[in-house]
Image (cartoon, rainbow, N blue to C red; front, side):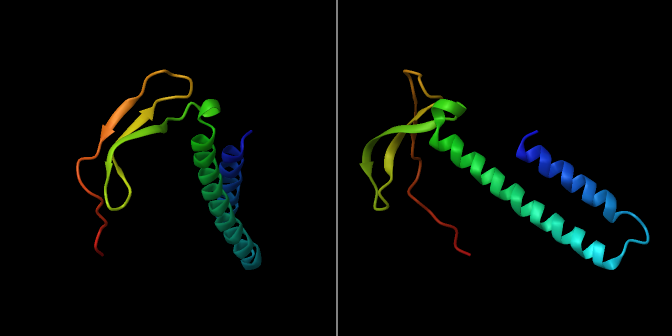
Length: 106
């Protein structure tokens, strides 16, 4: 069982306990805290997985940026980037920037 499955199973069991009638208030509070802790653990597990996929593309088969081309804008971003679909392939896809960097104005 991996971490993700363990978290899902534990969360399911806790929610089943919370659905019981006549649950002691102290136990209910403890179970609710446990659910919050599991949600935080799930987020950490997801972030860790995403980081590992990007850091070790040769093991995960995740795509990665393998080069750049063209002039850079004021933010240092190139006109084109080369994306390798998986580690070990000879080819790559070229993605061209269609507009300058823009941030939402809240």
